[in-house]
Image (cartoon, rainbow over all chains, first blue to last red; front, top):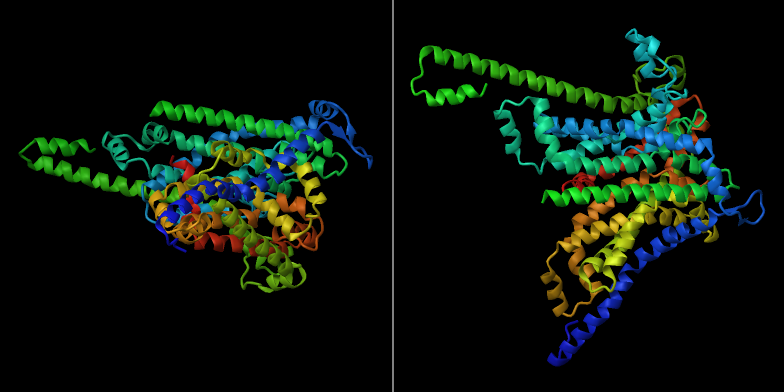
Length: 306
Length: 303
């Protein structure tokens, strides 16, 4: 393959360098094509669809803001948004609990690697399987209620997934179980970058466990907490579908439905694609706005630290 | 407690009472250390039990005799009743679903390797006009989730006659993994020395040859990381197959799992058996490349 002549080699090489631009474009073509065809095009077409309705089997026709107006007055959509907002209530637990456990693991308790691997298993399980599994565990006669009855707390036994007041919280509890191990692993990686001397220094100063956690670990882990918090918020908006599908199907009466799940419910009715698109575009705007905001904040705080 | 040590160091003479005090202090320290260790291990163990119990409960259910299970749901599966597994394997439509999942997941990983490595290399090591904008577009498309474009995405696959087909499933799964995969490849390749590429170029190698013969062989860690992360993602994904596969004939395993809930109804022993089968491949994939999985998902945590 080596070109023979000296001068021809340099011309050859130079031509190749210029041609490389086109080769590079060819290299990115498959990725860009997939994204353009199956993400950008549907997004544009979704915006268009969101202004149309197609009741029955009639061809879709323009309907102006009808779909958005319907969204504005749809109590089930409001319920779904409220259920997402409930995620903010549990977010502090999602963010701090894995940090505490990761800090405990960082003390290098004997067998800490086995503990970490055990916690992580739950994240590797298919979410839809986790949902069915907990459907049995949280059921009326499931192990949780049986345990409560056995220890004399039978009064607290209840259909966790089947009543308005607890269904959404039960979903968040199951999701917490499923993601907890990922949080521990991410915090463990973050803690590994903190020099161990700062923990030792705190110990020498006589700080107890919680003081060390509050005044040494949390300040050092703020960027990781922001990173993990962003993952949790994104996940609460976009990754709950299989959990809800298998745990409650959004019920009872929409009490455990989130926007993504409600969009699927509307979509699967078959003749309300326009409305499903309007809801989808709205969800897109919410997540895009939220993620951009968080990125801005993280970026700014990161810069001021350096 | 540790202040004792410094006071002992400053006092040159160590009297009898001092030594006694020190010994007592050391004993207390040891006890407290052991107490703390027991406390920490206890806490970690109880969390581990909380993590493992649901899984053990499901495993136990899958190994119980159906009649015995209906009488008492909390009995222990002793001796284990493996017939549930052969039952779901024979009449649950499981082998075909298992094959569909395995085929689609493997094809998806290979596709992502090719698409991601090509784009990642072009973005990181080649002269590319409009690099910044194109890269931002590729990675930024992460912001377009399936839920936002469910209906038009479905229509498009229908118009391309991709609904219910293997190609449709692979494309559907791959598309939503492309942004992060390209990002992963690009960041890895960016860390490789340019001299390597220059040397190959002087030897007369073109970009395709450089990528396949020089870059790819030394970049196996990123291939392993992309491979295992996306194997687990595609194996476990539920919503995308739910949109793409309309009939029960070619259901991947996750959809099969959902169908089985209705099919077997109260007989949780059988649906539990399917659930146990469904989790194994992703667990094996993870265990075989644990390090690369963890390094891939924690990459953003340490920057």
